[in-house]
Length: 247
Picture 1 (tube, rainbow, N blue to C red):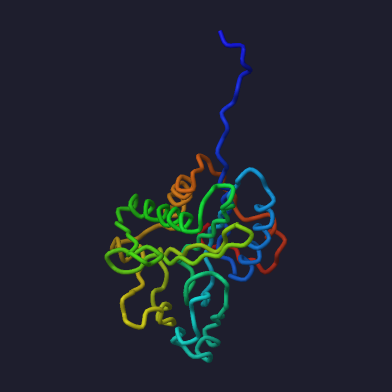
Picture 2: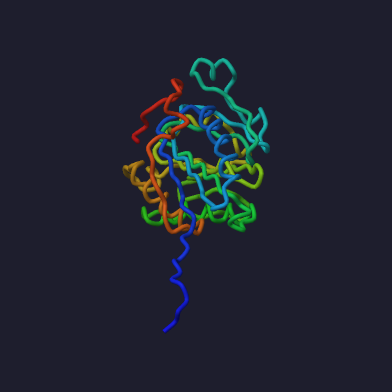
């Protein structure tokens, strides 16, 4: 009989998932920036995942330009829609209630992921989620995001700071599709924005999508466990935080 000491099996890192409800874009970005520093200092590979919805807002990434915004400034002001210039990849995107914002903060070096592999894993988690909903999603060669038979269902735009990812992906579940006309992201008409409700020709519950996505992203990132929290301690005393959004 072996006299070697008992060895416990090492667990994979956990995905700490925070359900933020509806929160202003700027406040969520500030939270991501604070978490990046904490995650970068850890030595256990822990991943933080923020899931939320934003009030109507337009963001312009590094590949975007003012010409992609189809509405003039007066219309945007009248509808209280802000425009944020951000340092993520990608171009001009519309965010609004009914769209699930997905922000994983992954320490790439600890997990041994390149940026390209991280993007593949992020998209794989979304595609598997759609598959479980009976939706066949795919990513055309040379593009980022997820498409279905009715059009583009998810956009991807990420950034990396100190080898920790932030920003992420935006999955259209049941948004007011008219808002997407505020942005012209594909002048040649190859991209039509769509959503899961249109894809299934019926209702889709945000809570169902979120539950499936958390599990599938944990698997895609090589983690065998995740924890769920409502809100985040850094936001609890923030009077500007908007609660709600079905969480």
